[in-house]
Length: 415
Length: 117
Image (cartoon, rainbow over all chains, first blue to last red; front, side):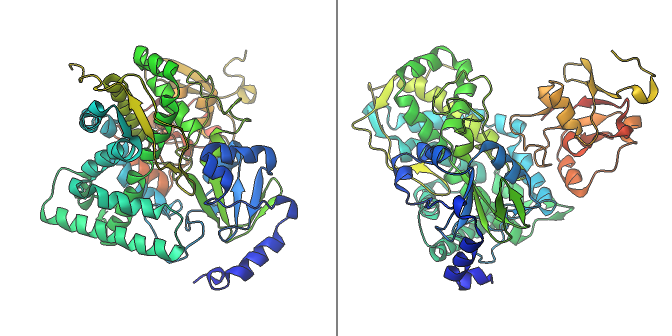
């Protein structure tokens, strides 16, 4: 058990004492007013006011790395920055999530197992299913001329796709979605531990069901998978399931909702994407850059110094990936949404050993959904005064997104 | 321009065959990975959109060395082997370019870019 957990105040004082005064900024990643006003521009504001690497005493105390170049360095350096603990505030509860909490070389063998299912060929084969889901969900709202996009569509689409891929019972959508929403909200480490146990239980149940009734889905396939020539253990299966649960149920949902909110305010761009669907990949990349979702964390494994910041073993580090995409040193005029941007740089899917394994699926989902949405709905806009309810934290979200359009929309185009 | 056969003065080149079949000469630099020198030469197909940044975690930079070239390389470590296991067009000379550092052993080596699946 880590001593820091037993004496948090003392550990904080210790940490604060070791840190150069000039590098300390009071910034709470969950409650900071600037983030509540706009999660992306709130982080970006620090580019003008804070050091490139700063320390905040909040949430147990942690470093924040604000620049694209430095985030890439940290995330590629598993020797100094470990994935062994990923929560802010840290949990130190002994749960090792495989492969999420592993560093190379232990990490790589598990990564390889999952890569089979998330590589380009496997994902591209899913396209017809994605198109079907998009139509099915849009069918529910098209005639209304209005909706709150966030849950019905923003979450509905990627979560349904994911649950079907995994082989999870679709009638438990609300329940699973509720669990993951709680997980990423501003709860105590103790409560988060309880939610973790809930997710492990869900996974245990799922694998048990697939042992009884194997099906053509990822959970069944994982039961038959091997790592280094032997079957995955129950612990490994539940861990991987946990990772897929978190990764699948609240990340693409937010990327999609952010991008649609932006598109709602850009009738010119809507027209352009309808006329030039070949620009959809660029549109998706620019959305990912401008409206990132996840803020990556690490724990210092070995002391090192970057730009005068003395990282000490045991300290938590956050790389807000949105700050990398919004770093003007990497992307000039970063606030501007420009699908024609020449040299776009983002690490919204992170980088290094733990680069998001779902990134191909996420990109395909965003392309497909946007295309089908524009085809079915046509021109759309925000409904009512736009007072966005942002959710800051480790995985950022938008809690509501009210849209309107001319009902009943368009029938699906003939294939 | 340098002549071949100038001995120590010559910058040893890799012969890289692209997916199109086109063959390009790529200069190598001591200590830099094969993936990075290929990228620096403007051959972007080695870098899938999903790339992990050269950290042996995505398999995108799969290349196939000709047997004679492959034999001169230092053996792959366990992580690279784990990932090569899942490359669909894996064969004898298969390596992940991000894990092969440039050195004298690469002088005149011939390789082609994997399918990227």
